[in-house]
Image (cartoon, rainbow, N blue to C red):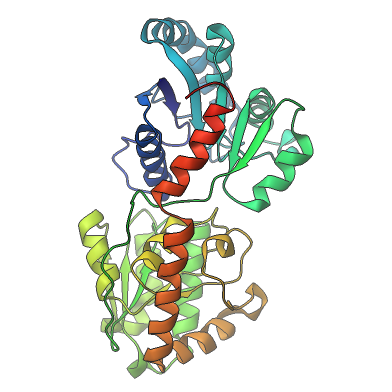
Length: 358
């Protein structure tokens, strides 16, 4: 079957790496592994991160203008279903609903969220569009149980909801390595807001440890790089900046690390946690609702404990290589069972089959 795929937040061929782009590419791979032909329906980016009503109006007009050509293309190419990844109030699917209605094909959403409180305020127009897309969808795949709550509360009676666990685009785990004196690794885009808040927590935590106990490598880059470097400046050569890494270089960074430290401020779930655990790294993160859904079962410091709670756990991990090895192996086992490509293929296939797409 030929499936139309659309990612309004960021198209899968966008040049800037991110977890969202990685997940979009993994979804395409999973759908193709399930035996379907996947075509990128549109590269229209609907995201408005500022709550600019005028900007939203401009993008909505662009979406309306694109519909006739999209509908004609879908008819010519024989699209059998439309799949949208990441429909939410800052980046709603403004085109999929009209296309599926014109073509009479099923509409499936992956990682769609509802946010009724956004129906008022600067994102009101976009929030209504995101809600409309959710209402129209035949199947919604939710990635976290936190998202499930609102989706089930407002689901239409004919709609199916399926739990698609976040997953890595791999059928097997990478080779495991273990070095007792390996550095700490942090991986994150350097953006203002939540990402910078995680870097600030990392700096606050490290300030509570003796400098001779650790070495930190940071993978990532972005507009807040100067702010991140300023946070890490007091530690001098103890912190090494790796910049943006391609897939092979990031794999190498995981392989030489001793643990991953990323607090996870407001992460949707965080693919970095899956990648690090697959490589056999224990995770130091705060106990946050979405984050803990992709972490190997264990004890993680509560947000309320702040940097002090993280510093206590970090000191224990640094001082006990055998505990790091055990936790890393448990993490690998958890990823192998729950978060690799075959499990995603099975879930996506079940959802597609429910609307007659085999």
